[in-house]
Length: 151
View: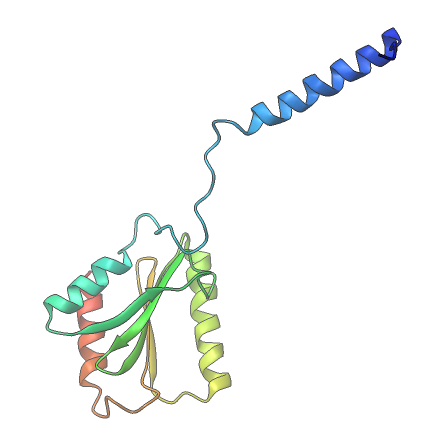
């Protein structure tokens, strides 16, 4: 065994104690949920929106969480209602809602979308796009909007 000087021993003890402090500092801390898995507080949740549509006789299909959520949202789900592409997103704050709505509109302009609507309810945003012209008279879109506004 090789003898260590007193200064070397102190340095090694300092390193060990410093490493232990770093490891201990991480213990007990809550980690943030993965992006797209946590709902925003204080606003209608996506599942409440889907339940309201079902209660109104609409049939949401294929809704799934988007990870990571687009449009600076905290949580988003996308699916279809009577063939109409529908996205519901929850936001943490009002500034994020404004930025998210603008990003949605900008995306529609780039894609040349003609029939679409984006609507805010508290900090939850509904965006509906009829890309396949499944709702020529707007009946489904109107039902989606009217039900969403009641939340």
